[in-house]
Image (cartoon, rainbow, N blue to C red; front, side, top):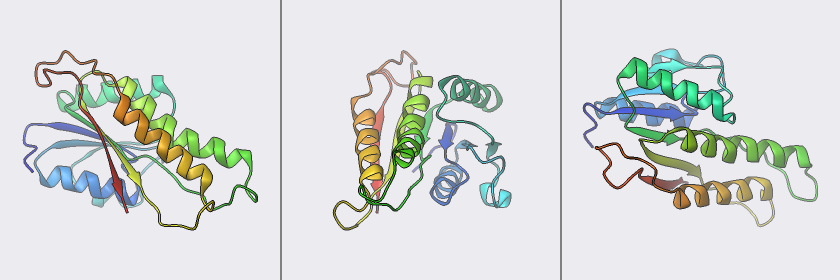
Length: 176
């Protein structure tokens, strides 16, 4: 993959999966920004030459819009957005609580929606973790994952940027 001359933003860029995406994009020649709710990455060296923006509530549309504007301003545009931000909690429907549902929807779905809506000119990829678990073990997580996948697939093309003549490109990938 050759991403020379491209600018890519990665939400959830400080976590394990986010760091791997940042490293892959850097290795492919892209200028990369890592965005995360954490104030700073656990291992700053792992993010190489990436622009690091921490302490962001990625579920808030205005925050994401400001962050992506900063990325575009500092790196010279924005060509791709990879939505990796997410979290997980082990609990059954019967033993769980509504606060877990709220948290998982906020982090796993709302972050992807806020970031995808904030961009009007980038290719969007949502990265969704797939778990092999017993039925009913992870209902809140599974429901947020399904909603996130549907959002990526149903995103309307809104771009008029010449590099994407048919509008924004959106996709979803599941990691196992």
